[in-house]
Length: 438
Ligand code: 5AD
Ligand code: SF4
Image (cartoon, rainbow, N blue to C red; front, side, top):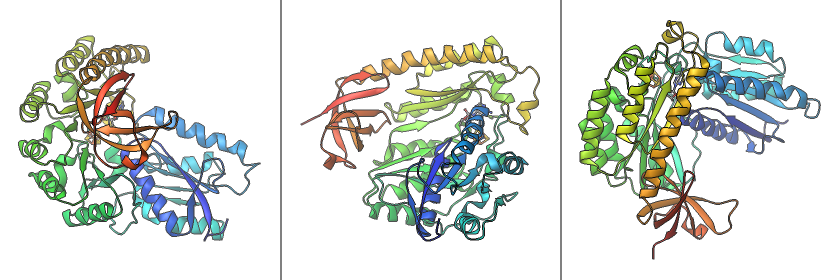
């Protein structure tokens, strides 16, 4: 593999933040002569890992371990492992030992060093372990992947909330916000390259630059950037969502009427022990306020079942909340103890079979609600931005509605990136089918 001409593939696990990091890494590799190719024939394979739940970690161990067999057929393959899992204390060293064929590991705080690390490995044949203990300053000069219809934009990094179950503050560092000017410049550049939708990313966007409605102010400014038709953002912490933000969502015509607002549990006792700093009543009130301002807002949520000490009564309160609020959809997880977090040491850890049973009950309840919601859209006309053509159905294109629902409909690829009125005709599973309204 020459340093000026090589193929690479990045395998991404976990959240949107990781997807965005992978796209930044791809842009950095392109700058030093890399070309993206498939996982099976790339000369450089990078695993961008997640450690938010044990399941995500197991997948990385399995997939990296499986590469050992392939090395006889691909002796020159270079393997790198990066991301949140590598940033955990002691994990990178353990990983290097366990997998001697891995050429480099890199922490989340070192991502900007990727080109240098790749050259070190390729030119000098070194094995590199680059993991900084703590975050540095935000690095603004990293290259951008441009030209996509929908692009992620980081507005802040890290998290200071320390929910007791969560590993993120330990692997992503303290909360740091980018300057408004830097964000605006980036969005302008994306718009000039053809991007139509931006998705603003942060662990808790409502505390952007320390809160104080700075995020609402940012939305008003981004709403004015020519060529950007849609603005989405995630994630919002219920304790910090303000009336100013709700008003900004209502006022800004390009801000999608969709909000991901993780509730995590419907029980005040569990919320207290999770260190979420709101009650179920406060959450319900905020949702009511929001719906008064924006009646058709599409709300989604995250919930953890089987948090230590969760009784059947606590769980029932979660079911009641889900039943009352009627989220459009939800992401539900079995609690997974993360080493080094407070909750991992709490008493009364819940048995796996109870977690599984609660997860199944919650999924079933939500499935019914999602289905009912989807069906309520039949006959309505939604504004859909098609992003790709369907692989399996010739002539079909796929896009998302303002509220974030996936919609399939017959249309030409010329429509990609535009906003099309589509009348919903049917629902299959989680997908809406529609026809363009003439
Ligand atoms: N176990 C299970 N789910 C978790 N999440 C975060 N940490 C854990 C954990 N230890 C979930 C939360 C969060 C989402 C991104 O992942 O619901 O909102
Ligand atoms: Fe984790 Fe809580 Fe921070 Fe979200 S707000 S990243 S759940 S600590």
